[in-house]
Image 1 (cartoon, chains in turn brown, purple):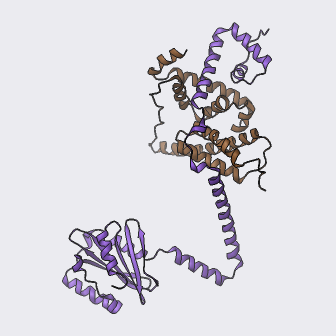
Image 2: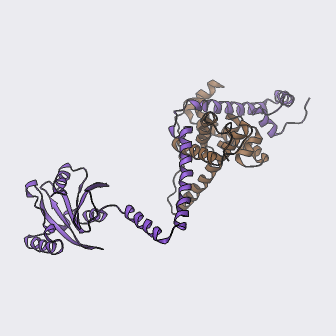
Length: 176
Length: 248
């Protein structure tokens, strides 16, 4: 019943937690809410823990639990937002900060304006270095969908970075 | 040599380092011959690199104790135990006779009820504002008669003049066990305390509890219970309340 010691032992958890937090923060802007997501994910994993043979599989499994939890919560929130809109109390989508000063920050600000689905994809591919197959498994979509979404996400990030606040322009030029 | 343009998917795979050496070489040669596509690919690469930099080293983020493995394991264990406990309780109440079950329920009900909750709600209803302060001398005498009728000598209204409090209101109330009353005292500064008396002698020991902004101090005398309710943050009112106390 209990998972073998090599599976979800403290050392493995400690190694994975920072990356899970990063993934969660790419989905949820609020750091505390992102950590809540990680906590819920790990508790779920500890409860349903079963043997995973390779560290990669374990990591993919945890990321996919986190993503599913996020999607479920997001759907719930979306329903509420729609309901609120029906009653004319639409919450404005929060705008990204306009005071980014470096190109990196501009990219990050642009990244923040993308839909969560695209953020998750770019983070897994560009930052985590997941293979397309691993990304497909984590997000629960076919690999063809990963490819088409990736093309769209890269394009969207490009457009958002180009239209970054004016103050970023000179810095971008310098770095080019 | 490659003559066909690589697919967009190939270009992304190239950016993400997901091609083997040979395929990568082909793309590189093709890009060298197609500078406008090469610029796009370079942009993608730079975006990815900046994203990596901006997201680097989550290990250095401030630690969150909620995410400590030991803490997580404790929570999971507690949840398992709670679930087991619930199942055990269910089995127990199913398996045991109705007599025992009934008794357990009574105990549960008793522990779920906060002591002197009625005194606190009576204070909130009648003593928080001075709107109920309509007691004149005649009304006071009538109220004293009524109290004596129901509680005998225990129903004597306390005299708090020496502490600066005087009686400003009184409400006759009813409980399941019989008549009850809430007496309201106020001082010159507007501090207000409620003295509540009701039938039933549950408290073998005097007790007190905080309920929001209020403090209730209670005790039983024979078959009658008393509560003195005062604002929690008003030390003077609290002091007077404790003066009334079980021996008062």
